[in-house]
Length: 533
Image (tube, rainbow, N blue to C red; front, top):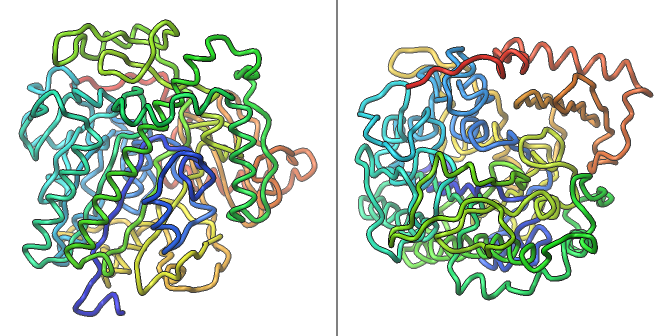
């Protein structure tokens, strides 16, 4: 099947939010994800796909093929009034939707945006279209979009929520955002198929990002499952990864994160187990939705010519929620109950009147076997599952060990569609893509080593992956750590003192990259006041 022939592939790009490396079954999880597991069994898994450590930067790279700072989203959505830190996709970028739309694809999106500037959760009327510093998906190539422009929020009452440029509200009390995203995506795909156009569908679930909100029937399936605690869970997942053979060689299990107690010493264990049960229910519900989308494609005869990619925007999230979050959220449920904000062990999570997170110890388990979490440049923050499915093109059950990065996804999808990456649009020059296509690997090509290094900077956390080495630094401080990453992907043995010449060489490469992309020292950015809308 030729990607440039009359049957150009449909593209379905699915992004999870704050999902850890080992949180789905085909990557070692106990959580029921039969639909993703089926896609993996009939497709390809990637063992070394990296993201940008946090939601906004990853989304910027995913949709442009540029590093986040190149795209204007070097931090989050607040406008620092510097080219690399505007908080929205700059007009110099070409999004996947714009490039594919110019080539005849019908491009639609459902779910979270979060790369279009800052939105007030309780006052969407402060925004009017068109707003050049707060562009929505329908301003960047998508003909349809229904979802949320901001980051985390209630699954039962997300605010604000848009349909195109129009602010909307949940239809009724049965609303649950994960289901809504699924239903919206199915309808959008149906309209593309009815029109006889190839489609690009970008589905951005908020699951399993906090708050811990799930339907009771999903929670019930996991209640009691995590009574053995996070230490046992990490051991179980590590053993499953060994049996799967996905990581070769299998890294040693990193030590429990220092801020996490042993399970035997943890207080409030019943509440802790329930937190993980709700998190698992959120993942489970997302997988159910993916199954509905794939079944719709099958019934419409479109599955075999649809390239599906599934991944996460960063690793598991250690963030805790205190009661002061209420100041920037909504105080009551749709039926008038007061929302109880914060990780209070006296309140079991899951319902619309709660607002909690699962905390660092369970996030540590989500990131098995790696170190650290979302926001960090260590493997626990940047390693994501990537499942690729494309019948007749991808060998069932295959694994790609090539070092890959989210900057590679845009060039891969453009190549699959037979489109040359644009160097201009509407007569204006556009920067060359930073990533490399892995299209040949999807079609069975060898796992050839990546020639170009991969870089990262986020809130002062920095990284270079080059050849067999990884240079990484954790904020605060400027100390570089060095790991022989193929042998030590759990980052347990710092070799910086042994190989100072390699540290110096890779640090120079990082400095050159940072200068070219407009990266500023984090000490400067963290003190810089953001522009208020």
